[in-house]
Image (cartoon, rainbow, N blue to C red):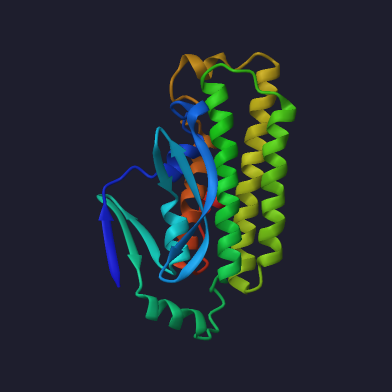
Length: 229
């Protein structure tokens, strides 16, 4: 097993509810990565000539794991031989998450991050938020939820799907609240106080759940956390 240590600021966290610098220049897309012979789509951010990959999605693609500690992040990637063995070994653990579900869930989390980042950037910078604009993000995330639901096969998948559904519904309600606030010209408090939107209890709860889901999906087994309820 190989471990990579790094004291980094998780862009997965930053892009969800913090405002994005040079937002107009950032390009979000999914590209094909090949890790240990396994290929799959991984969300990336291209900005100012640099490419940032979703480290949690890379860990999942490589059948690895990602853990967080006070001093940094630990990325563990098995050798190609052990990864193949893990895929072919049967398991009866009810908490196990299937590969298809994990992939669909990671893609859904990327959609939720994109939705949240766009809403936060607009509100923090005093831009009007149109209902139709927000609805476009919601439709993409709703489709992602349907894909994740179809991919849920194991008991672990179905339990994790409920947490992912809770997060989707939470982001949807949060987005609706910001749309209504924008329509009533009641968003000045956010643009006048940097960080106030991110620091609201509702935003903090969504961020905590989003981080937990990423950690759970990286582990490959269902876990529970109060932040997602």
